[in-house]
Image (cartoon, rainbow, N blue to C red):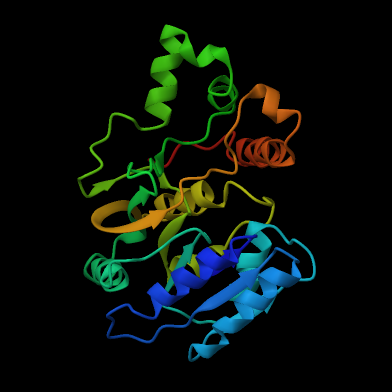
Length: 263
């Protein structure tokens, strides 16, 4: 599943990559569109040339969470792969490697590959569990204070070796694969969120149900490296996206306030 928001050209390239994957299993591709833009829709409609693809154009921006839940309806899949519209899957073995890993490791609920940005840098797609204080601090001068600087670095998992297959708290949903039984048991993404926090939430539920979350860098996908949630405290007052990030983070904080971290 890929949900577009004003990146139709990149989505077109990503879908082309999907249909070039070397796989020995059935693949259902769903492309949704939250752009509500005529030119975006026109380009995405040309994807109808690919066999079996399903295109869904929403009349308004439903948000990341609700749109993905609608896109996943009527699909009784063994695995649900979601990825952002900027992702390119140049390696033709990405899907087969991830699915084979899941097939051979039944105790894994979520797996994601290495991600490289267009500038050649490794995307830090692994995170510690969301912390409201640190999320605020990293957007201000406070992140440079000695103690907070260390905490922010740890929260951003800067100490990890991104070349190793490893268990992690949670993985960004820019590209991940969720076991179908887990997806269906938790009802897909939690719709108390609108745009963010669906990724730590699904990983929290995975760990809670005894299923591991695995970073798997033996295969790689590529992203443009543009983060919609980027920006400091000054940007916060001008950006609806940053305010939504805080709102969704608050919902996550409230939901898990009295729960023990599962990993």
